[in-house]
Length: 219
Image (cartoon, helix red, strand yellow):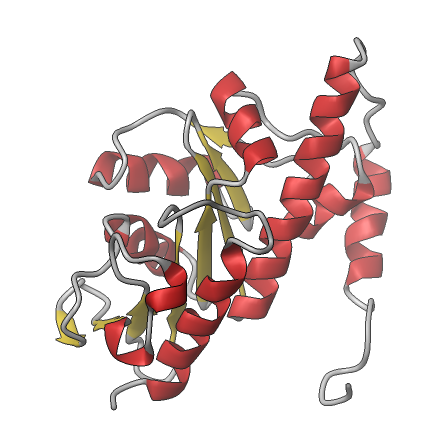
């Protein structure tokens, strides 16, 4: 089976989306790119995640040509392909409809530097791309343009896209951005804008994250 490991990972992380409250039903999508070939394993369209097997995960060439898999790939295929073309250093894309980030996206507001955790996105704030039809090339182009190198971008009235070196990194970023968005909305509900960290404080947080956790190769 072509890209069996990558397809298994897409199926596995897809099953985690609903329990993690990152989406409901068949919403959202995810993909993983093989750096050696450039081929992309992407979740199928309109299937419940608990029903997705390796064989249901499509394998695409960088231009979107389907190389393997009988199922139709996600309707947001253009979104995934656009980010892979723009970010050769990132090999996983997770797109979710989690409640807090979606609420913020419906307000069409960025996620500001209200927590040092926002620095996990690689920037001081997470931008919000203008609205475009779901599944459209216009949405893909707007998202990449708004992200401008950030590993996360809100999609107006839609959700969020998170990038990572692998699926675990992209998935964890989606969880952290959902947490930050929830805290931000709670601050707004309390009637106040939260204090913002300075650019210097955010830069320090990014530097600290560079050495956070266990050394590579250790568990």
